[in-house]
Image (cartoon, rainbow, N blue to C red; front, side, top):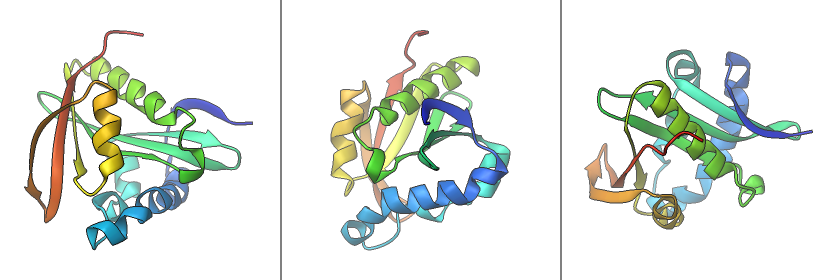
Length: 154
């Protein structure tokens, strides 16, 4: 049985997170000409040092969220849903979890960036209240930056 409630990731989840991220972001390698940043992240370190949340599906992790507190905002470092689980509301669930993370840490804004080649994300985030704040090259990636105010308590 699966539960769509995110839970904190543990070191035992790292291999499952890596498989999920490879499946979710692998479709962008051809578009970008290289692996997206989430595919090269050190998830063992992130699980140890940041807030990493996962959603369990039948026998596997189907969604992951990595948030990092900054002095004036919460950074959404990774948001990924397994291709087989997309359309089931997991992305929205993760974004609501990010709002709670921000509120828990006294932060009033959430920021993220995505690659301009990830055109699906350029539609997904604005539908969920994010506003584009700029574009630029960062770490060799053509990025689109977004921000939104933290949603009120659920």
